[in-house]
Length: 148
Ligand code: SF4
Image (tube, rainbow, N blue to C red; front, side, top):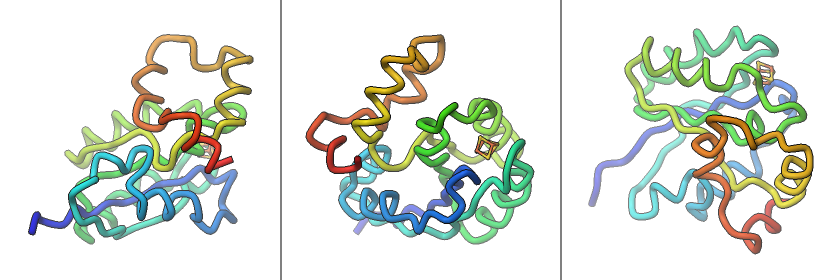
């Protein structure tokens, strides 16, 4: 059996009361950014919010997640799809990767269809860098509708 991957998830504090339903369902089903673990066992070793703009908890939470075994940090899909998307998204990724020498992945569950349509109509994701940011969570329409 392949070695288990241990991950930490950081969510946007706007969704602090979220019970993690979409993230955990997509992890179980290996959808969205979790499809990369299709044939690998995964354990969530940390789940927390950024603690509110500008994300002060990012500095500390990852240290604890890493101590607990995390080798990959997922910046939850809420950071990508919020209105507006988190303005610190790319900074968080760069900071975490540099400071903790750990892989950082954009997203968790598939982007829901309603968010995709709204951001397309707003042109939110048409600028540079967004193709990479949304790549792992775009999926197909059928899957996106399951996460609306
Ligand atoms: S927008 Fe970014 S910094 Fe602000 S609460 Fe959400 S994740 Fe944190």
